[in-house]
Picture 1 (cartoon, rainbow, N blue to C red):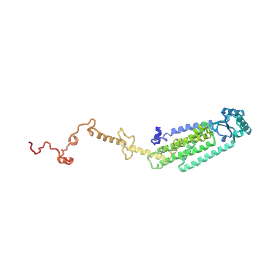
Picture 2: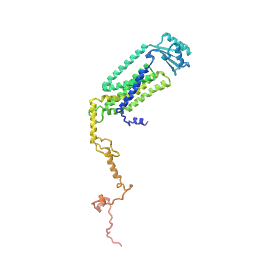
Picture 3: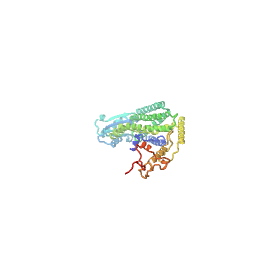
Length: 417
């Protein structure tokens, strides 16, 4: 909680760019796991992509094992089918491979008999989808994704520069691979809702990256004549300046998506929501990570070889060396500065030393006669303060104090009786 409080008070400075090799390693491990899962496990394609038949019927207190036994009794392998028990509607949803008309009628009659379904034509919903329709949907989805990526690449190249566009596209591919890898790992079905959710998270990931890149451009606008900070430092400052905004945007977006996933699909059993919610949840989280830890550090590596960036880094190094050489030497002690002072300023250690000396004079034994270890008052004329001075005259005393000095030791002029 203390760390979150510091982050939201902007009382922090995280070295995103300096630790980029750590982030690259984490992303590499995550991408490797996702790619291996997609190659080895593959995807659980929905009926819209794989083709087949779907039967939906009342459960009437039956079990999934009974449905699988019914499939085996009519010659259909249960391992090639997906049987779901919908808790909200108290129904079974049975997805099978592509069946002939004879097999469809035979399975419908067997299910109606096993679960005591009256009037199967009305109470058992059967829908079939051919594999050609699924392949058409797949091709259209891939075409839409390619067109989207090309248009985004062109826009970012015109709006910023091609290296920023390349870094944003790399982060986008990162989010795509992670999202699809999670689908492969958990075994959720890939449906048209999944495709819609993926296109949605691509826009969210780009939005967060563009916000960070816009601040990077502002911080590096005058780097041709600047000598205060390097390109990597200016980029890292931009990340820290936009961190709170990125976190707020991500948290606000994740809360309703998490409700769809964990409450709608998990607790209420609305299976049609989980395909949409999982892609959005994983994509938003991955998009936030890639914008902060992947896209911007990658941009620094892409820009490192440019002549302007190398010249800026060299100017900053020369200026800092000059300041270090011209800084006054300060004795080590409490309050001493760890680095050179800015031009026109005094090192903090020197200021502390001077202030400490003044305090020692003001609060020492001579300045505080009532303090511990105080000395007796020094009589006038003693020591350096009174050396070579005469006692004050009567006129001077009257002018200074407004009263006459005493005339001890002098006759008053009157006789005593």
